[in-house]
Length: 388
Image (cartoon, rainbow, N blue to C red; front, side):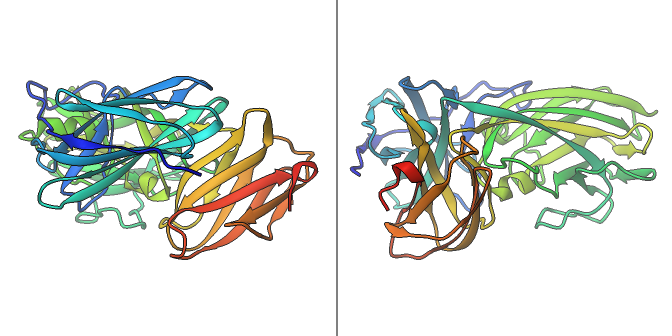
């Protein structure tokens, strides 16, 4: 396969005049830790139709929300058969590509500044058939167990799939937070599109409070960095009641969930003067997460968080053939649902026939990825189309 790249020099910018709290933000950003700057797409619309001309607009800020100047950049897609047209217009990188296969594409943006600081971000596009799932998480007083902040022991909690069996409470002087500590049972590699919060709360003092969601593991709100806050932390005002009251808030978003850590790193937060969140079995506090995933093929799960699915696509005229591109090293279990449950499938990994189990079109692989290949290719064919 050939890789079509767009390479150039760009001067980045800082958006100004944006409030520190916002109802909605439909941008996708790189939010991993230890980054010298962040790459994001403006007006990121990840679900597209087959043969669409997919337009994109790239901007960059540093960790303080300040502009990053005169960066080298490289933009390409996986699968890499697609031509990417790309250029600098003003202070942005703009371009487009045509999606000619169904499934999950990656648009990869590499940027390096003049100090040799480099970052890469991957933006998913779902082409053709997609599905939607809704999972209900319950606010619980269990401390999270997957590396999330636990604070002083009473200001952090978990979001779990099971409701409480008794009264539970979390409290603090300024804010409390909850993170998923279980994964959705289906299709965690997805685009998170909506979080609906329904919770019982009160504050010690009656001033205006805030309720919100945060994509990455950040413990503090910093209103001096409005550009950064708008992309990773979304807040809405609520009356700071001193008696218990229900809060019902809906956040429409477009956040891609690359791997399981993106779910664990999510946080739901309650800010104010002495916030308290309460739940019980009769009327539990909860949050509904709605997300979109690819159907052809469908990546149901991947066990190793150090391995990234770059793409999962099928030919237009034969959805029973699929190509999965992976990046990383280590061993992983990978579960793929093919569209036709009646077919028998064969597969090669990096060109070598590989073993797997299959039940009703669900294929389970145990794969070893080494450093020999920068990108690892898993090719799946129905038996009548197999060349193995």
